[in-house]
Amino acid sequence: MIGDLRAETVRIQGASGDEIEAYLAAPLDGGTRGGVVVIHHMPGYDEGTLEMTRRFATHGYLAICPNLYSREAPGVDPDDAAAAVRAAGGVPDERLVGDVEGAATYLRSLPGSNGKVASIGHCSGGRQSVLAALSLDLDAAVDCYGAFVTGTPPEGYPLQVHPLTDRLAELRCPLLGLFGVEDKYPSPEQVAELDRLLTDAGKAHEFHSYEGAGHAFFATDRPSYRPEAAKDGWQRIFGFFDQHLGA
Image 1 (cartoon, rainbow, N blue to C red):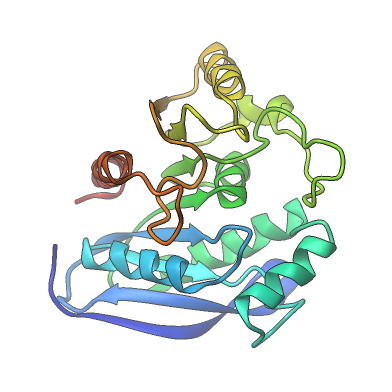
Image 2: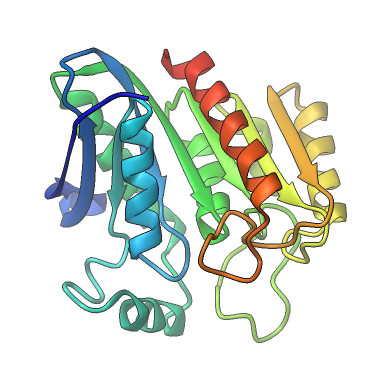
């Protein structure tokens, strides 16, 4: 890990040219490095996600987390913002891709960028990380228990999303997937389907599933936290990014 870093709120250009809020964390050692777009989960642009963004900077990456709820609820408490977006069915896929593209462009414009950018997301953000990797020229992507990459939401589920099964052959970069065996969304069967479809399409991917872990096993502030699974997962994430973004 490195020493000092800078963390601040910035404004970036998102989908349709909209100006949106984003949280940037960057090392201050003057080196050249890759960047990571952190896609926040359904609970929103919250303290845990911003801490994760800083964690990537402490490991030597440029990192940015766009606030996907900037339009619906600017300056609103993350819980209230998430409730407003959930009531609307979630972030539209096309807009998500535009916001991630804007964040990646911002990272590549920074003086310390080596031009390589990856995405990572948990839960709804995991699906969105895969979506970004299908749609944009990224160098790597990580899906942490992303729901409904395969499989469909049950009736009454708050997110109005569709599976990405018919687009998986469009994957543009290597994908790392981290899952819990006890999760329901995605279930082990849905993870196996995703693995099979990517294998059939000849797409580079690496999946790991953890016994005794369910959904949100990375979340240190939830009962679902599983320290051993999270520790191994973080090691795999950093190894994956070192390989594809440059250590």
